[in-house]
Length: 189
Image (cartoon, rainbow, N blue to C red):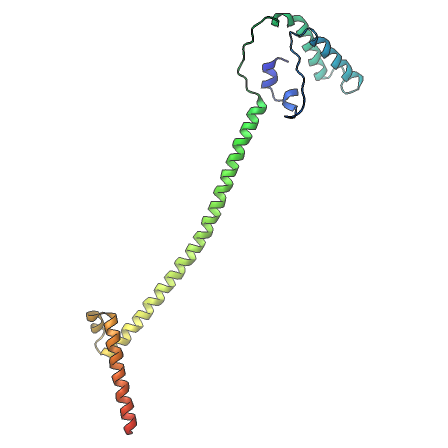
């Protein structure tokens, strides 16, 4: 097989080789290459690993014939590097890109889960704050109603002087009323 075909195709010896596995390359210009290929094919047949009509054996024998026929033309020919990327390299790079995307997706999912959890917590806090605001408004309404009764003015005193002064003055009014009640009670009234 020609170098460019070996590197470009999916199902070749090189594509099936483990990255750390030893391989041996025979060049077409090497006069011993066709003999080595024929010996390899004969040994595969002898071991029963292949039959003569198997594509692997037929391809090897055709390669040996081609090397015999055109091998000499490559002896002094200049080597022009074709930029053909090894499919395994491409696959590994794509795998790395996919792994990177998966890591980014997992990180985004983790952030989304954290955000969802914090949104749930935030939602719970907002609900709690709303309940507190409602409770505060109810308590303030009750307090203002009570102050309006103490000051006997329908809430005008609180609006005019503010809540704190209205509470302080109401405390004084209630203290005086309690004193009057206690005094009357002591006199037997």
